[in-house]
Length: 101
Image (cartoon, rainbow, N blue to C red):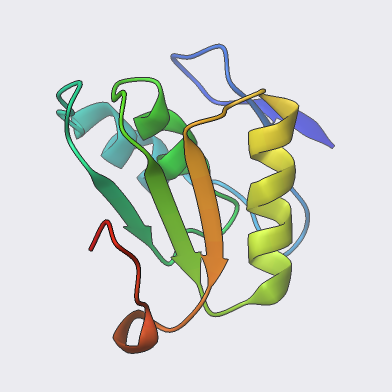
């Protein structure tokens, strides 16, 4: 099922396990991202916050999650929205090693 992220033109694939909640939408509305900020979304789930953040920065946005199926869902959402400045990684936070960090 494809939904839209409120207050944006972003489309979102959701399923029973990975759904955006009203908390996610409220959090997204309070993000204050500058065009050169570096963003890491820890526990990215379906990638909704990372997708939202990617609209406001020129830098690479990274989403990490311990669930491989969550990463697959997030990657599908990035492809659906044709977002190029976003990458998703299957990793625990303490094990994550990336040049951005």
